[in-house]
Image: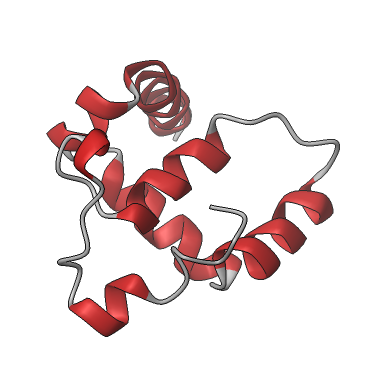
Length: 96
């Protein structure tokens, strides 16, 4: 994750690069879930880490994260993180 190995795997391998311990998720997908499970001192630190360590823009990160929220593989890999994100999304939808 911090050595840049996840950087560009989706584009270079068409999303086929897999981490055997991640229940069928690509290394990049597993890294996104791992980052989302961390606590950050502020949004600037998280966005900077996304750019530097994952090698993607924050917009792409959140697009991938939103797709993962409905992916059963992501739920199997990080149930606490995915369920927390789903609760947040559902509460925001209910307020609309």
